[in-house]
Image 1 (cartoon, rainbow, N blue to C red):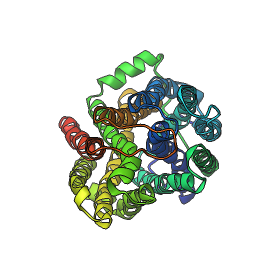
Image 2: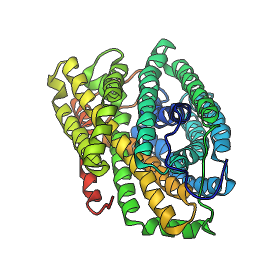
Image 3: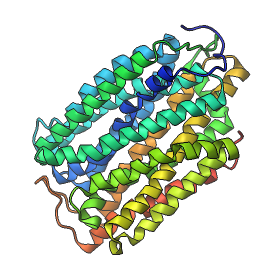
Image 4: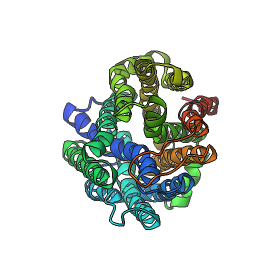
Length: 435
């Protein structure tokens, strides 16, 4: 039901918390698998040059940056965010499989098809993600309860990333690699998205979601108010830069596995090492936030991520086990980043609602998810640029071509130094954040 005013500070039922968290089976795979598979799919299966491939991945996601605030405004006006979850989520499941359908084989036409299919899927994702992220601010006003909700969500997100990110490359291999293997992988992830959509829609049907009574009359006015919120602006900028660092690392997983580790199913092991331990540290980060505050927790998690990424510079001389342990450290930092940033956003939305009396959660979350989308889109573009500058050679055989030492150095630096600098330096943007 929808009524005026924020919801009471009561403990959400397990069904609602679990149901809401299942939406991460949609956001996790779509936020992870394209960044993981799409760039190497273009360069090592379709034969697209690294620089061009980076643009093909970047442009559809850049379009999504424009769509997200619009999706926020539309969902604010609708009064029922759950309907968006169902419609957009089911469409996204089908469209994701279409990205890797490969109807044009290899070459320029195949690359163009991927860009169009990815753009369409990204549009559907915007109309799922923005209402989904806006819901916590309307489910409860309790900060501790929101942290609990975000902890559950990020735990399922980590599991979704583990399942989709670790298994998607494995499904490619089991499906025979090349075009056929990617088709099977696209269908697998599309089915996972459908499961998450249905779980989130039906799991939250008993939730007593309430909203502010008044609404800002125009999108431009809402964007102006959001931009005037200094704490939101600082958190958003930090999140964009850090998302770019995470996106850069995701884009390099397959390349790092092929050219640095040189181990069969290396991408799967990297993802398992990255996400598996993250599930274990969620309660620890929640305690850190309760004791030291969410802002300090976010800074600590970011610096942990950056330190681990820099440590991977020694990877060419390390055994695989040591590399996976360092990646687990990075994953622990990533888990903290997600928990604290996503828990800080509803707090900012609540303060704005109390101050203005207007329902603007959709616009704030629309801008926030647009920023995340932009950052994650820039990541593969940055990594592709590094590959291009260091002379990476593309292939249309479905197998990575042999690379010279300079190209392998580019693979290493793009996976380690670039993410470390982006994630670590971004915390400076939080100096003026006010909790």
